[in-house]
Picture 1 (cartoon, rainbow, N blue to C red):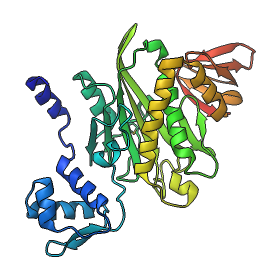
Picture 2 (cartoon, rainbow, N blue to C red):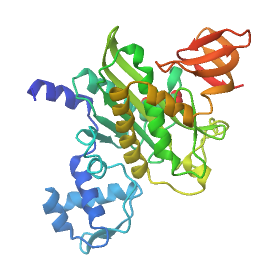
Picture 3 (cartoon, rainbow, N blue to C red):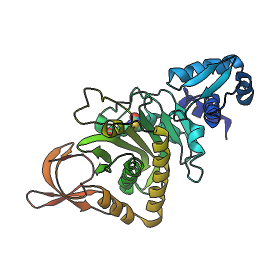
Length: 340
Ligand code: BTN
């Protein structure tokens, strides 16, 4: 890679988790039943024993239960639920997502980082993950509450060979992937509210923000930002009336690592399906898993309109058709959809 490009990119990724902490986590996870001496760890990951000790303390502060101390050596009793790149990428080897996984303990917004990486020529398939976001963004200028290590905050950089007019299909693709990745965690599969909110009952636990850089006929890159409330309990007071988490719904803890791996595999599956066979299988799958597909009474709120109607399926481009009460069927390109 060109040296100037590399140094520019490094500026974007300031705050990136040190690859050697990732190596430490992986080493401990791979040897979770045995005690490994501080000296051996230090040698394997190329730091001093003092650094190993400091990083162990940091992992403990993040809730990883590392047993032992410098003299006896260290071990963990179970695989920690930190979204460490090494643990993720080895399980994504046959997807485009294994190679460039950027992990942060704390960022403003993973979408911002992925957009900057996109501007700087980062290839298709880069994944930005954070344990915590301080300015997580939602659609329509809203914020996304991103409590530390409780949810999944992830943005994927895609360079799809499609036009901006087809880009809403990417949004559906991401919603379907998130739906399949979380369905097995629940007794009753979640509902998908067009285009891609995931609901348990009437409460939302997953939202997707797709942003892109495009010309009229070509998408340069798209960033699909996915937020999943996994182990939050309770939800913050300001959102508890309409938001929930998998844990609040099921009454148990869920593995963020497992869900994220499934999410990225499913995203790969639906993305390939879209490119290979076009919108038809995506729209068909949406019709199977979303109660909003057809016959649902909804209130649509756009920047300059608000009306009630009944959903009438999707157009091949992924746009929602709604029959207004005066009988006119109108396309809804974007906007808020609420059950009426
Ligand atoms: C919405 O439903 O309004 C969309 C929410 C999207 C939240 C995710 S969390 C990861 C990524 N980074 C952000 O700042 N937003 C998205």
